Length: 368
Image (cartoon, rainbow, N blue to C red; front, side, top):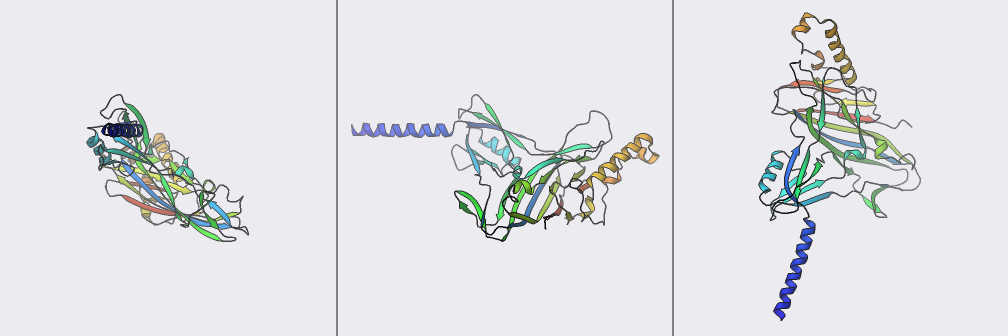
């Protein structure tokens, strides 16, 4: 009788465990379709935002920081699909935010969802587009996950997940504490703290159209940039006696030609700018920069227009020659351009070596 009771107890425990696992593994991953990969080049951007935050009041102020939870989704992989899914992820460099767990049987697919994306304090801005150029966009890859409700397969449902590659984190102040359950830091009366935020974003550069006939190749132009807004980062600063000043945006980037093309010819404005900046200093590869994106667009379109009206013999014989794509060397771009007339990278290359560039933008409080 005792043995029967023990067996019943084991059976009940088994049912409970099975029920919990079934609830956790409501869907099984059958396949992963990777989208947005390739393009003709990749671009990676890292940035650091530093600045001063001052308490103007005679009492301490508690400044809250975004309190978000890093979410990791865990799914069991259908039997017989582990190697194929792992191969796709590894070969497509998805393993930074999506990976296969090998030390579990059956294998698991885990997906990171980082809630700290750049939409917290950035917005996208479209610049003037040239009339005679190929539009280039920076695409973030996505993955369509195919799910089943049976570990061996069955009816499939799909869900699309994007690459959470545009992320940021607070690197100082490091003495984060809590007040009423909310994370943040204290600023004593009439005290200035230095704050630092790191971030990055990446993607594939792709053309938006394809040739349907014999035509003259035109340069690729990316006309969208990200604008970092201190108003979005500190929306209540002025109202609560917090002064912002002496902010700097340090940006370093890398553009790498992919193997599927022999040459690239692109014009890319500064990929991310600090809203209201008064100065920009570029610190590397000065021979690939033009001081004004808008002036490049104007000059490029005017040259094409002149050719349409009455091209010279040289232009007819050399329709792809465009001096605006040639590097300009030896000028100072430490200027204060209008907000959305930013410097741009303009270069042509056949090299597979990455083009590395960097610049610094300065912002200061005008209410001195």
